[in-house]
Image (cartoon, rainbow, N blue to C red; front, side):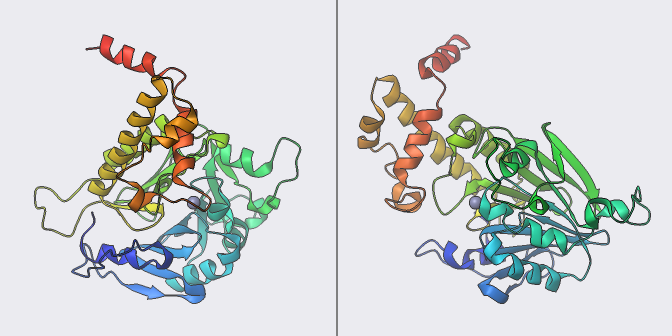
Length: 348
Ligand SMILES: [Zn+2]
């Protein structure tokens, strides 16, 4: 787990796990402070040029520099004005990009408000200098293609979002990149994890990764099977986070290492992600064994495959219960678990 001040992230209001201590020590790089902003939001400085805003729906990542501001996730629409005020307090520079980590309302709800307050780079001097009215001149919204598909409701139903909230730059490949504010920014599509439109955003010089809802330290990961989420893709995405993050080795006492911002909850380091992934993998294995033994979904739930983890991550009520999680694993496991293991055995 991330030691020291990074743990101040724990104070993110509703995100505190009961009994968890908040420890404050020396910052890993530069000063790291936490301030309370309007609307009950919490603003944390993680690096000299990187901030996190908590309490506005999803966690929001904010990178600032000479090119302007890059925002990862826009929070909920109810908190949009407060999030915008908090961003503008961090820096007076123009907001250039919003990157959506999924199409969930608590991540894209603030798209319109925040993008309208910004200014695209495409019309700036020194850029490709498109006419000033390009897309109304507002900040660009980047996401995986599937996020636009979900938000624009192509099935003929009315979209719950105004067109101004839609992503303006989408991609369908594994990786999209930019170089802004002195660092490479990699946007990595995880095609079937929490949903089919998830991205992980890696700020290479800041050494900060924004994970979106692939990682939710407040509960079992939400695997939205209706929107293309799968247990195998979720575990693959968590493994990708483990691969991107570097812990403080060999000097383990140092308050350092890659900072991973989850969609919801407290800041993590590589070890936290390893533990979270292993927890998800163990529960997946249990569900698979029970399913392979011919059990129905109800029988699998009754066998409590999430035991040992429910106190920390489980819930019997609310939008994402332990049973919802078990059901999502059961439904999204490859058709025949036996096939997968047969192949594994054959590979030995
Ligand atoms: Zn979320």
